[in-house]
Amino acid sequence: MKLSEKKLQKKKQEIILSAVKIVNQKGYQGATMEEIAAELLMTKGSLYYYFKNKEDLLFQCHEMVLGQAISELEDYFHEDLSNEQKLRKMIANHIRYMIEEKETFNMIIKPDQTFSKDYLHPILRKRNEYAAWFDEVIQKGVAEGEFTIQEPKMARMILLGSMNWIQQWYRLDGDKTIEELQTIYADYLLKVVK
Image 1 (cartoon, rainbow, N blue to C red):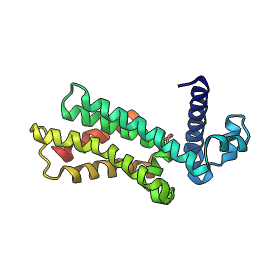
Image 2: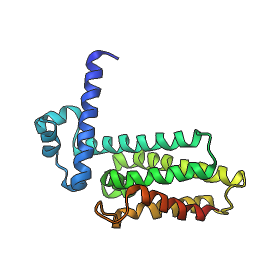
Image 3: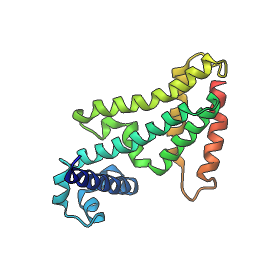
Image 4: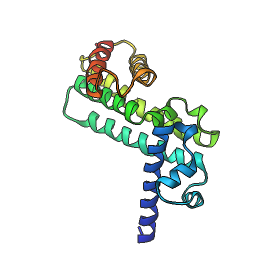
């Protein structure tokens, strides 16, 4: 890769990180190209050199955040741990993303409300890839006699659905820390697969 291409990639990454921050603060509708540009001390017009429009930029945010989350799930899957321990780590990771990357993950939950048809298929494919890691651990746990669930896919939907709901009630100034919530959720949700 040429130096100019590396600089371009670095700048795009910087813009995406700034956009993720603004989206998580203001939500998809509240995040404007002006605010993202101001965060980087750029003009709004300069952003269009790197991204076609707001939707393209937010799609790239989605790709980056979900790509990181998938990579972490894959790492957990390959660790030398019991399936229960792997699932516990995956639950903790999902909760962290739901809290720390709330608005970015909201785009994943209801992508048809955020993105046009052009972006919808790649988003759904990536979302399915994310869910597949939960399926893998649950199915492996069943095959190895660690889990007794009869419907692994249903168990995964229960797990992810209940964790996604945290966004409806979680408050930073609440009486539980993220770490406490991760433990509580894992303790209860693991009973679904046992």
